[in-house]
Length: 602
Ligand code: F6P
Image (cartoon, rainbow, N blue to C red; front, top):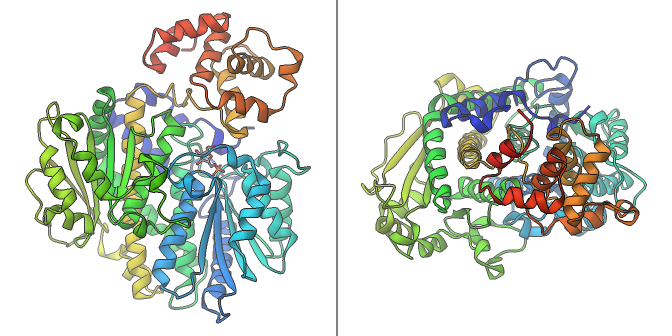
């Protein structure tokens, strides 16, 4: 059986031929599965007793570490690869800020280091030794550590190395595994230079969890809307679970499963409300963005605080998920690096795509209306005091640069819109008239479900924090929906598969074989692997030397190449040579059209 995180979701089977409104509806149905997946009686899901219990236990450990006076000896560290690492970073940032302690209690590691916060770094995911060393370094001088390893697929060797290190040093570490597959579906493939697989590590951890020496939080959330794209539900669920745990750990009174459930229910309500009120806006923005992409334009996001961080995260994921260029989607944050608070500080010297300040966006827009007329800009503001609103209202650097380029006529001017996330009774702020589209999402649905009333066990600042976190989820769903839908509309997705993926790590190598097999009727797994190798090495025969080379060798050969998987699919379908396949594909601009015309799949 395929792991749930790699499975195609039937809800989105025809997302590639859906219109924007239908796409949002499908995304909604998929997101709702985070809270109430159907037909999963035998699996653990979010509201299962075991999951809630594990969350409460982890919150108790966190509480101890946060509040004991230990002269800086304790640490809560989260870690992961890709989106999982980025959400780990965001949670460390959020809760260090929230607690305002002199000694930071929250930390993160991410495979590939801080560069991976801004550009995708896929290969380090496979490196369990670096994972272990990154953890050791991040924990220097600390003796009591809560470690949370995040891997949606229960698959990343980087995280396996860290979990294993924690289990070898139980006097120092309490390990937690956070992901979205049952243990039996954890990845059971060799990890370079190691005798253990992820499955083995997860089983060891499961055994320890029987005595509360480790914890497993792995609710099934069903397949992603775009198969395997764990930036969506996987990322959202990670954020929701971690926020719930840390809000509980800072609660004003004792807590148990029922308090945990109350917080999670607010997220569920928020998800419902978001789609009830924002679906039209998301479908409009996805259309405008697709229009931009088709005219070789770009999508930009700008926001402050968490909303700014999430925009940058969404943008960073588009190249690995959709083969987008680094410039296609970019995110910016008011205040830049000092606000971002990542471990390695300002990385702007690494290049244009590491410049994240809203002032950098202002400079980019300063190239003038003609240069950006096909672009789309989405400004996300949370509450009336959001700094990004000030930028606009006071006509600061960003505000005045937008004024010069924005307009109602999409063909002539840049499309600029504001998404305002406001409390139910908040007045609408005054905004300059050059902003063509203003869209408001209000929370909560009713007075019964405000963080203050439904979660009276939280401190007042905890309730405020929860409110912000709920708004941030809306921002994430907005960004994810817009960028996913726009790429779907651009023809980047075939059925609900991202077929033109980069074959840049072990997981993606195996995913590629699965995709080739699925779209090449009648071929076996071995044959699919063979077609993949033929495409990687641009040959028509795979000799013994090639076929017995390591996966690492294949990945290194494949990573810099384009259209590796589509080329293999066309070869397999048309029983043609590598050259013929490449020639056939070159006739098409859109990968979905190519595969539809060149294969027999209906
Ligand atoms: O390898 C690429 C990738 O799929 C990213 O897109 C994703 O965010 C990352 O791996 C992490 O995956 P997981 O959380 O399953 O370890």
